[in-house]
Amino acid sequence: MLTTIALASLKRRKHTALLTLLSITISVCLLLTVDIVRTQVKTSFTRTVSGVDLIVGAPSGQLNLLLSSVFNVGTPSKGIPWNSVASLESNKQVAWIIPLSLGDTHKGFRVIGTNNQFFTHFKYGDKQALAFAHGSNFTQPLSTVVGADIAQTLGYKVGDKIVISHGLGNVSFNNHDTHPFVIAGVLEKTGTPVDKAVYVTLEGLEKAHSHQTGGKNSSMRSISKPKLDEHEHEHEHEHEHEHEHDESNITKHGATEIRYNSNEFAPQQVSVVMLGLKNRVTALQLQYQLNQNNNTPLMAILPGMALAELWQIMGNIEALLLGLSSIIVISALVGLATMLLASMRERYQEIAVLRTIGAGPFTLLLLIQLEALFITLVSLILSVVLVAGLITAIKPWLSSEYGLFITGQLFGQSSAIIGSLVLVSTYIVSLFPAIAAYRRGLHAGLNSK
Image 1 (cartoon, rainbow, N blue to C red):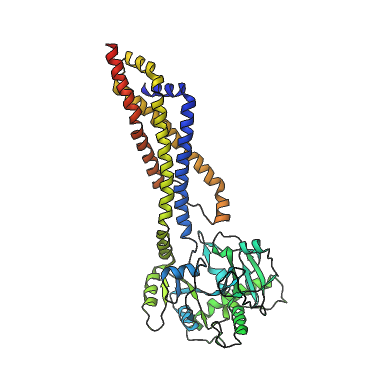
Image 2: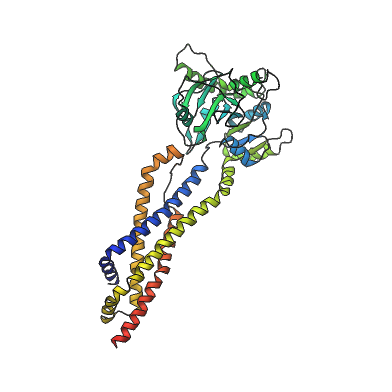
């Protein structure tokens, strides 16, 4: 009965009620969207790199090692000798390694020296492997693979030649002009820092630096020839598999191309090494062993923990967005209370009729609150539908343009909490017009006597 009266009352003031409904719906949509984006960005942020169990470099701080190796930001740490890398590769717990050499740029974009292991094992997002939009991985010592953003921004295609520059500045006068790299492949867009990086072979990078330094004191100077150690024979089968991988890429281009395996080159040192373990359970154990090794100072970090620490630093921005959205919702609810208060004068006759048919002041109080809760509840339902539709529609665009991968349920525990808080807030702000109706009901009752 009371519900029917409330709906009829709102219907009689439908224009005002619809505007209030629209205002609350937009506000709640904004709050829910911020919450979903916040949650998904946090999840996507922690999956910028996926499948890498440990990142090993020279001791320089957990965040610095993470930023320089994964996000291509900051100054790379001091190099680690290749014999340490070979020792890591021979460790029985290690399944694969990705060596990375940092410190050069190409027109402001970071240049990363690596080998074809990177394109085989590096994953992002929900363990998505890198894919080539055009071309293939390294096919000769002076091969390079560019990210999607670089190819689009600079108009590069397979077969073009590029020259890298020494140093990390946006402008450099120290170019390696004598060793241009030929673009062998363009990666598909990932929405990660991979899109803004130039990948060159460790061997090509070493040649460029050896020429610059006249073959002396080069940080990238190679070991004369990779020496077989006692553990290398144990990995012969794994290397054979990698050889087959490289060969398969070459045979696609014809038998006349020179067979090249970038994984065989061993520089003197690299900046960082990414490790994949045979069993992820052993990650903590290996991290402890590497960090406690006094013979070779190394620092091993768990990418997941480092990313979580980095996200905590960004927590202020997250709180600011939620705070602003909450203020907008509260403003909309205050508008709802104002609408109900303003309508009190128009409802004197309605209240008098209700009192005549036996409705007490408390019934009038409940009626006003029921109207407010009904508007808010409809707004919540509309907001959920609209936000779900919007996020689903722009999901591919968010993934390709911003690397934001929307996965799992859109609405979780935090969404439920937001909905509950909005209803509680509605109940509180609706007390003001409800109490006004209650007092009016008392006067109407006294006058009737």
